[in-house]
Amino acid sequence: MDLESLTLVLGLIFSSIFLIMWMKVSLNKQQKDLFSRQLSNLNMGSSLRNLLEKIQKHRGMVNLYLKGDQSFKPKIIKLQEEINEQLNMLKKEVENTASYSDKLNEISSGFDSLQAGSFTMSSEECIAGHGALIQGLLVFMVVVAEQNQLVRDNNFSNKYINIIWRLIPITAESLGKARALGSGVAAVGRSSALERVKLGFLVNKIRISISLVLKQINTLPDTSNQSSKAYKKMHTDLSDFCELIEKELIVATNTNIEATRFFDDATRLLGELFSLYDSAVAMAASEIKTSIEELERSNKRIYMSGLGTLSVVIVMPLLLMP
Image 1 (cartoon, one colour):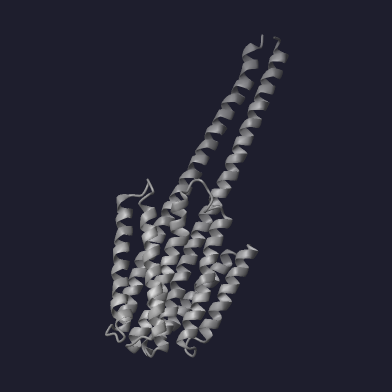
Image 2 (spheres, rainbow, N blue to C red):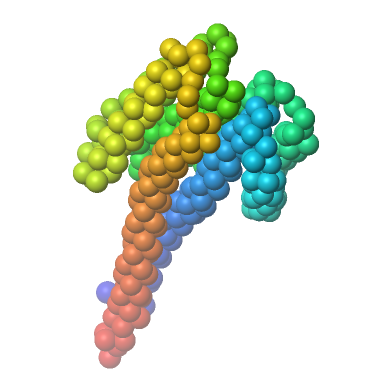
């Protein structure tokens, strides 16, 4: 084979190899972009989680105020400032995503209405209004996950995703409702038949959802002993709190529980529950970052291989020159 033919053959070989390499790099880039979006929306999910926690706390504080505890008024005003600040921050994050922006504006408008009537509405209006707003926020958290393939990507166990985006938020909202309703009952020292029915329903819902969380976390092969212990502790703590609600607020018509103490105990448990959510999100984020790093290493290997092939194509004809 003469030099010209050899050069042509090597050129064709290099072109074919280059095309394959370009396709692989392109696919890696698409996958990396997807992982980057997932990571970004995990962060957004955490911001929504923080917003959820604050609005739940606002419900409990406002209900206590409406039940006669005037000491909560300055705390409510301060919390409202924090919620508005976080809503404004989230709006800036999603201003280029119309569907997210519309949903956040809807949530913000709903909170504006609650804020305007926070010291004049009835206790029933407080519970119902906050409940509707929080339900919309919970749905939005799942939508963010679904639209960014966080609940469909094969990198994550379906059980694992179910724990993060569904079971923990559902458990937290049931506990949040019980905090608001139970502290209101404790503030007046007695409960109505309807309040006892509602508390009984919430207690049952908490028990079912936290049991499902514990059951599913124990089936995940990569769950650390420390993580498993944290979920078991949460299960025990919530079970004890449910027993307290049953004994003092459901069975007993009149209660001696101090309202602020009940509110603080429920808030502490909510904090522990949300910390489990944060830990689960951190584990998911770690998996995504590892996948991104692997794609980056893959692209580096492809580039190095391409340089090696190009060197052969350039050097081979020179070596064969007479």
